[in-house]
Length: 230
Length: 311
Image (cartoon, rainbow over all chains, first blue to last red; front, side):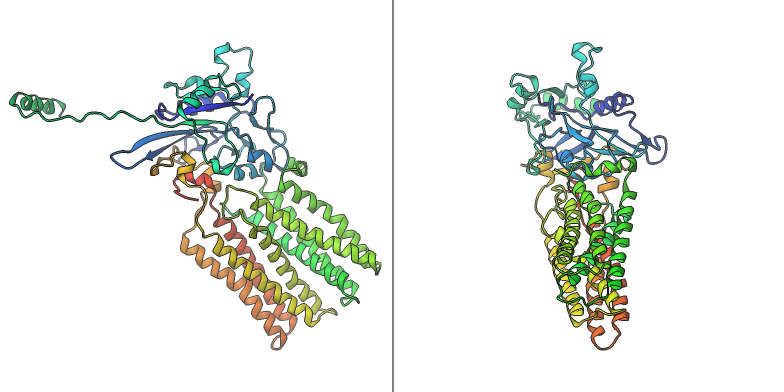
């Protein structure tokens, strides 16, 4: 099994619900609470597994705002696993999820240096590295109803921009949508084979511009419309 | 890359210690007749071991969870940090075995073999330290062959200066010691200059490959947080370009030019002890600044997600 996420950059509206859901789910759970420093202070900061950054793609007037949620890519050849000296960072054989063993981590930050995607953060309160667990404590939890055994971020997305599934199964939702829409890996030149795929924005149809009619009735209608909108 | 002073002190001091031990062992083991007295060899090696130990202890200060530090030698199959830890720990019995042979005035093949093994092990440990940084594809400035080479050469350079200082305070000072230290300073300077030119070449990942939008301009609109994060604290450290260039000149003067001048002056004008003492202080300061620059010049590719166009 090769579990991972597909994130649809076309549909993501940048609401940050996935980041909040992740933060809330991980208040308890396998890695414990994600610490915050000065949450009500001047410079609030803290540990987040999922971060959404916003980019402008293209030049005006053909530009587009793309919202980029990023969490651990659960890479096939994960550099964070290779460089970890204590063996705290490991990739599970059965489902490919990359995890941090909190009992072994010594907080040396080496894995964070090795990760090109910034997936790993040091929890200063606990002194260990933490990262997206792909909600391993949700997806295998038999106490949850079957359709809720997904990562918290996938379940909560209001625009259904996130998908979760098994990339090894060619008929799973993630495999199909990644194939059809051309799911991309980020920074493929690093060679770490990220499993999470990003779907590029679809080509949009051209919207017809408003054409001025020259007859007087259209001109009056035009003037009324502009008056109303002011 | 945020320069952590504990790591800077660790790499410079332990590099100097391993370099000094390697030079001491090679001079002793490879020369036909023993030039330095046994007491001086033990003093030189003792200084080296103190430097190494101080450096290694300092390296544990940058850990956020040091109680698990003993696990750091368990993944030698893949991790250079684990390999460096293992080599550093195993260096002590090897070095102490060599020192026992020195103390008992041994000679012959056993001594030569032990000396060469100790020297090679010391260089291998410094090589592993350099590889910790060089194996990271995410930091382009470090990901080249000159990184471990410079770690070795700068460590050996500091070691050569300390060795000459010890030799000048007793027997063991020969013309060869001075010329060897001059050659090593020159070689280290050359290698570091090549590195400075090499890291300026733009290549590798861009914001386009990082976001998969390779057909258009991509610019950061909003990074998603109003204050810093772990990523910006650790990797967002950026020094003004002019300051970095100025510090390179400081490194060139203090780490290489001034020690070279001191070596030249030790031939006639100054006493060897005085000249090499000044050379050591200057070189140590220069290498500390060089190591600081090594971190400050590094740009992790995660900066591509925080506004950089190219790393």
